[in-house]
Image (cartoon, rainbow, N blue to C red; front, side, top):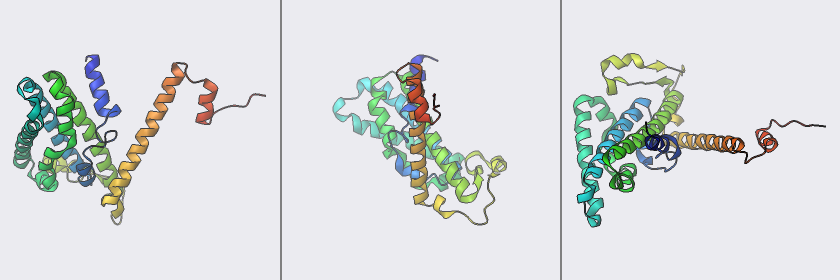
Length: 238
């Protein structure tokens, strides 16, 4: 894997995550993440749309007039989303019913049009495909983590309804993590989605700060005693 490809995946999965850094696509992120299955299904659909759209935009970028590029990109995205919607309708009808309007709304997702304009229209097809895959997997990971957190806290289960996505055999994937006498409604309702997203944003910020301090310590930009003081592990020397 080339250094450029590694950087694309680092950007998509963590450094420039579309959900946790750019804060794009919050409507489906908050609305569909009530269960891990729904979140994973929409995330994979969005990833497929991103890859196909980036490839198409990159392949035709030399023949698209700059003045009308945005309408053409939207037409390409709408065509890809229509194909993905028909595939989900044919092979995962239960998931299709569960996601509802949020499948066609991928057309309006800022992640898709943003990557088409910012990256795919300026780079060759292989790199554009990798960028779409990286950004899609980053969004899928954020969706899945939020969906799993809300499902576990709300219903005490994980992968409930996995058969909607993977078929009848996937019923055995259902795990009862917590035994709850009654559902914790706050986690399942919209306020729970906002609280969960806020916790994820805070967690990413803390991890990034830790990584920056360790990098500064290794490069000699931060004295060891100052670092230990910030970490609360300093020692008094008499």
